[in-house]
Structures are given as C-alpha cells and as structure tokens.
Image (cartoon, rainbow, N blue to C red; front, side):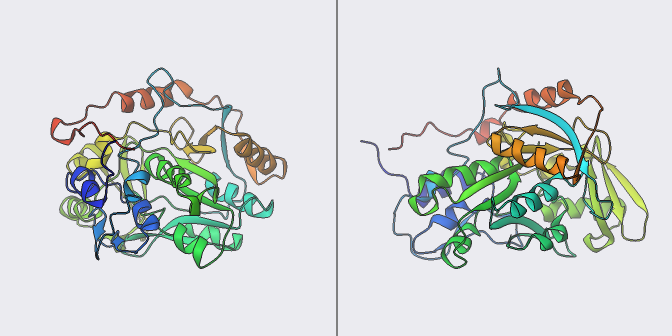
Length: 340
C-alpha cells in the first residue's frame, strides 16, 4: 500500500514549483482550516497552522488529478455548439454576456440557490464571492485574467449559508477542481452547475501590471476592461484604448499553465469563450443536458440571441490541440505518483 499524501507533499510537488492554480479546493476541504490562498499575492496555497495529516487536500488538487480529454478528442465531450450573446444591451460584459444570462436562468428555474463568481476591485485584485440573488449577478459580468480561488467559498456556502445547489464559473483548472470536490462526502453533489471559460493561460497580477506600467505608463485604476484577442486591448476609464502584443506577457504566465492542456474547460455543463465567435458574441460548447436546457430556455425567452453565423469550430479545435501539445518545461515535470 502506498503512503498517503499530505499537504507537505502538495507543497513540494505543486506549490514550490509554482504549479499551484490557486483554486482553493485544498482550503475548502481542510478540516482544521489551516490552509489559505491569499488574495493580494500570486502565491500558491500556504500552511498557516498545524497540519493534521488527514490527506484530503491532495485528493482535490487538479494539478495532481487533471481532467483532460485525449488529443483525439481535443474539445472533450459535447452535444452541440453555437454562437450566442445576451439580448439586453444594458448587460455590460467583456464579450457576449452569456455566462451571466445562464446563471440568471438557473436561478429562475430553481436549478441553483447560489453561484460562486469572480470579482475585482479598482486595483484589479480579484476574489471569489457567493451570490444568492440573481439581481446581483450583473455586477460581476467581467473577465479577470489571473488565478482566483473559486472553490474556497464552497465551505462557507455549505456550512454557513446552507446552500444545496451551487454553480461555479471558472477556467478548465478551476472547474476540474470543483469536480474533484465530489470525492469529499460533505461536498458531494453540491456543485450542480459548472460554466467553463476558455483559457490558454493566466498572468501573475503584480508582474503583469509592472509590464503595463513600464510600457504604457498605466496603473490598474486607469483600466476599465481588458480584451484578449491576438493582442491585449486595454479599455481605459477615460474612453481611450491602448494595445500591447500578447507576447510581451509570456514571462509572467503562471507556471501552472504549462501543465494545463484543457483550453475549453472540458468538465463543464457549458464552455464559453470569445474564440470562434464574432466580436461581442460567445462561442458555446454545450456539453450536458442541463447545459442544453439552460441555453434553450434562455433563447426561447428572448434573453439570449443565437447567431446564424457559422461558428469557427476548426479554429477553436486548433487552439485546443495546440494546448494539448504544449510542451511542459523540463523543470516543471511532475514525478509519477502512487496514491491510494
């Protein structure tokens, strides 16, 4: 029988090599509550008390247990796909606003009683928040480009708020972490809806803004929104727009992104991105019957518009294949693990 892994192993194999995705799953499952992911840094999970060696945290780490379809199935399993956007012009979102509309629909249908979404302050520091009123969702309809501990609030949602049916919005690694929570009895079945976001990489916030300051003389407070296309487009609060080559930020990509091969968030009910869609729209991969129900209801009620444009499925597939073929730096190779 192999030795049970503990946080010491997680720290050695994942945190110290800069492979931690900061999802916060380990924080949520820790019985003595002695782990944390700090919001205002890019550090991985930290031990802040005495570990009881329970072995739960390695079980829910998506770096140790990735959900990734094989190269032969680069987009993972799905039922259908299409191009959609919110019909309400008042809904301000980075792209098509489909994620927000689907969460609103899930609340209306009683599918969820809470949603964990990301938010940011004026300095672009990000955190996860629990929303229980669909009227509050539109405050969070914006994309954030660094790792956010999206799974950590599950503990509060279940233990303190007594929520039973929770949605989580996240990238492939974050939704994989949420899926892994089903291994722990307390959390089993509580995450009923996963909305995944296309993602090729994220950046370390502090280093990202050092580059923005050096090249554009901008601070986080100057920026209203950021669009990631084949370049970075900064929409400023004064109405101006600035741009930088996306390659300028290669040096500040999280190390964990090198071991992620899931571009389209393959374990989600619906996966969404701007890739493959016209500006202002979302490409959606509908993966489950629940996801299909939400999309169809939102279209039928007029909350979502469906485009007649042909989705660029080959382009999205190419991006997904490129990510699955992405080379892992030798220094970041994980040893083969034996767990029980």
